[in-house]
Structure formats: C-alpha cells, structure tokens
Image 1 (tube, one colour):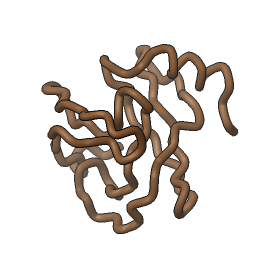
Image 2: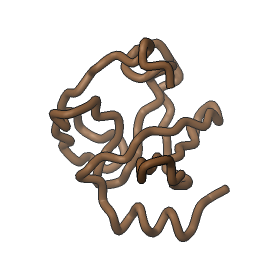
Image 3: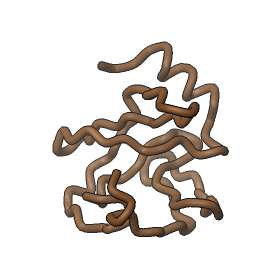
Image 4: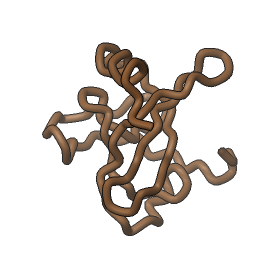
Length: 105
C-alpha cells in the first residue's frame, strides 16, 4: 500500500452485516467490523471513499504477512474485487482461526 494514498478515517459505525456498533480503534483507521469481520466496499485506497460499489466485503482468507501482520482477505459480493486489510487488535480471534482453517479460495 502506498502510504501517501492512506487517508486516516477512524470513526464509529454500525455494521451493515451484523448490526454491531463498532467503535473507532484510536490507533489506526477502522475499516471492518471486529465481530463478523465484514466491511463495505467504499474505498479505492484506504480512507478515500472514492469507490461507489457499496458492496459487502466478506472475509474469505487470512494472509500471514511479515512481522506477524496478518491481513484479512475480502471478496466483494457485488463486483468481485479482492481487497486486503490489516487485522485489528479487537477482531474476533475465533472467527479469524476459523477463516484460516477454512479459506474460501
């Protein structure tokens, strides 16, 4: 990811998939629900809100990255785009483990 293209937006929101009230992280931009790990396809680059797809990004796999920086791999149900986002410290680890053991691609 090009850090120059990262726009910091860290705000509370209600998850459109499970209805969970998601609180801002306080240390980086929140972009997915920690309960169901789903997201909304609104960005081309993190925080830019420049994509008008608005489809649901469903977690399909977990990518282990360098320095134990795991990323959630998403597939947009509407347009088929694959995106990756860093895990957050409060993400549901039971769901992370389930996705790791049963990736959908």
